[in-house]
Amino acid sequence: MKVLYFAWVRERIGKAEETVEPPASVRTVSDLMEWLVARGEEYANAFASPKTIRAAIDRTHVKGDAAIAGAREIAFFPPMTGG
Image (cartoon, rainbow, N blue to C red):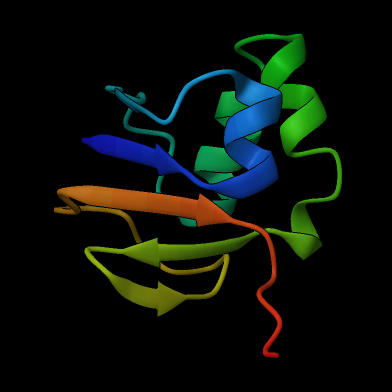
């Protein structure tokens, strides 16, 4: 699946996107964040406060308990504010 990173999440990880193949035990958005954190310090920094990270599966906003099975694209981004 393709994982996209936006704003300061992208800056901390150092890339805008990547293709990953998480193990079968990674079933939800929260599981995916935990798995990514284990991949390195840059991911740990980006996901240090997972409750502040927003996610979208195939361009639909979801919560951390959303299943990722069958997802083509998962995006992570910080909270957005209006102006």
